[in-house]
Length: 123
Image (cartoon, rainbow, N blue to C red):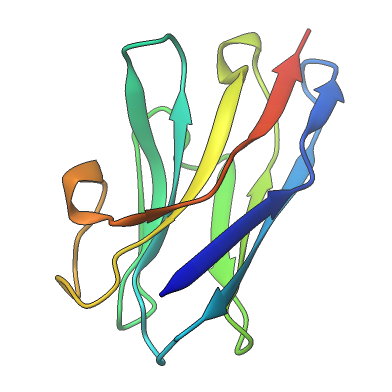
């Protein structure tokens, strides 16, 4: 139903900024909840930021005040990442909760479509 393609990752120095983008295509409807997750280790995936059906954002405590999630009217999701820290290094994934909860927050089980990821390395 939905394809997600992330871009914008790369290497950056601590304190710098990166902007991630995620283009959604396929059978879309207005107000699909979307989110950014990151995989820190093979087994650990954590929610970073989400935007719900009412366009209300949610952030993890670790990124609050530094990252900003937004979505345009063409189903492109963004993550503005500022004041980056070494511990922000991870593979970042875009996700969509298609046909499910309107307010999934940072619960990865609520998201059923995922992108391939884009690497962000902070040194």
